[in-house]
Image (tube, rainbow, N blue to C red; front, side):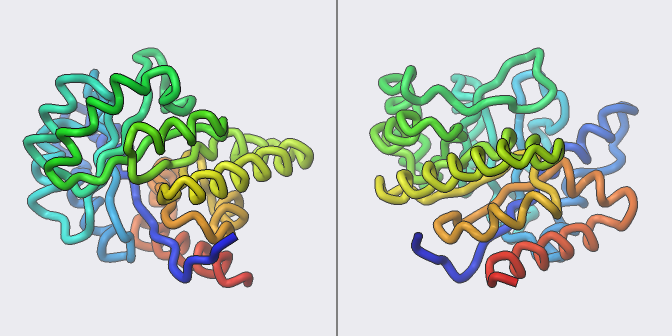
Length: 251
């Protein structure tokens, strides 16, 4: 595998907004959290604007775009409403994800193969504004191939099953899921796609993923916001940055 010297860290600030929304107030402010993460070494900020606005709100996206010095990655479903919002704000990157109202978090990759014709047309106006298009996918190779065929520049590989196996201490499942991720990353790279990864990563599970040289960026949110309760957000981001760097350098 081709090694990249530097692995970018995107910090997802959705669950700061989840805490805010639990009281219906303005505190804690996810934009303030994004600024702290930026100061701590985040290379980008990710925010998922869901159809039901369960955490990030429209105004948050506008303020993030106005405030951030690092790139904003907008996660969203491939709907007409979300397309119009993205065209208005023109984030640096857009990651298209599946959305199911009943799920607590994104549970699977996007079915790119089954939506090739519609997705290809959907992303064109977004790319025309200069947005980089990423598709959140599982490790099914036909989905990786389809992502290249619709014209995406990036795929983000769903690391959830691997992280669940890590959490449960299932050695065979860990090895199997890690092999799938490595194969998917290699195939994506061969198709000319930039490879990102994310979902469920912790200080423990991030090490093996960070050591995969083809992967250029990791997006991590829930774990860092949880750790921030105990250590502070800056400290959590800095610790993750250090862990990623050590793993990247084989330490």
